[in-house]
Amino acid sequence: MQHVQRTRQATLDSLTGSLHRSGSTTLIPPMEEEYEDVTSDMEDTLSHFTNALDTAIDMITKELKKIKSDFGKAISEHKKLTEAVKAENAVLKEKCQSLEARIDDLEKSRDEQAILHNKRFSRRNNIRIV
Image 1 (cartoon, helix red, strand yellow):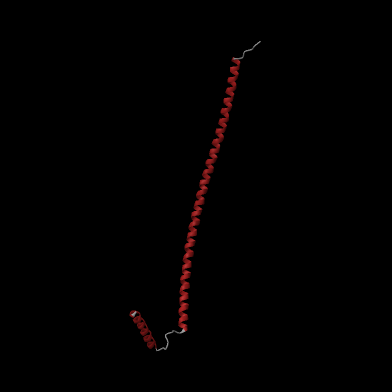
Image 2 (cartoon, rainbow, N blue to C red):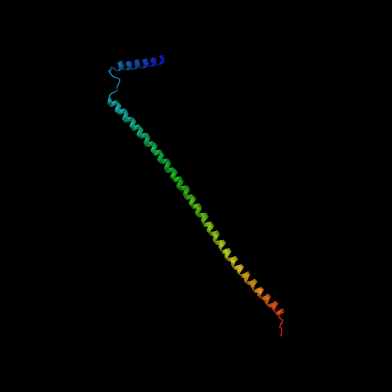
């Protein structure tokens, strides 16, 4: 408690000394000085805010350019892969058609052989009953 009273007394003594040294009857600065200080503070604040906005916009712009570049690369890679899959699909379709044709040929050949076999078998076993 005494410490607080001593601090208050020291502050009061300091202000009283300032008042006597300045030759003024009041410690309140004139309004013009206060207005200049406020204006100066506002200009500083506005300058800092503008700088911060410029920095943020630059960072966002750089990030958007990077995203656009990455997206372009991803699309390009996707196109390449799609074209490769399409080419492979075309090759596989050709192979399937070739295999289907080969299967058809084999089935025809098998059917023809079965017919020939049946004809030979029926000639050998052809018995006429009178």
